[in-house]
Image 1 (cartoon, rainbow, N blue to C red):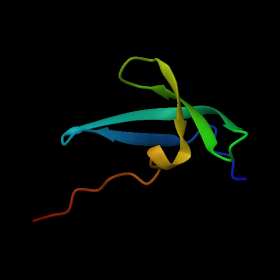
Image 2: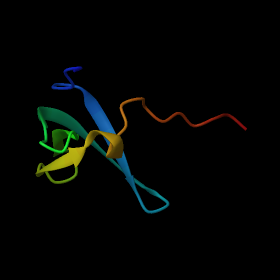
Image 3: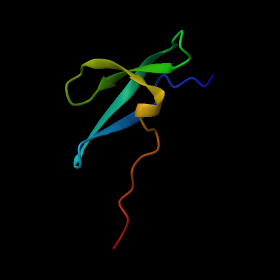
Length: 64
């Protein structure tokens, strides 16, 4: 299992909002889901997220 602790991640909300955060912990649930605990820049709060609900590759705006 890959260690994501310390990696910057992001998650989108709606059509125009992206939140950035840092993974501070991870765990494997009994049902097989890898969960990561993220400290979000927007509020310094932490949430547990399924690994599939966050992204690690930074979004890039294409030139027009």
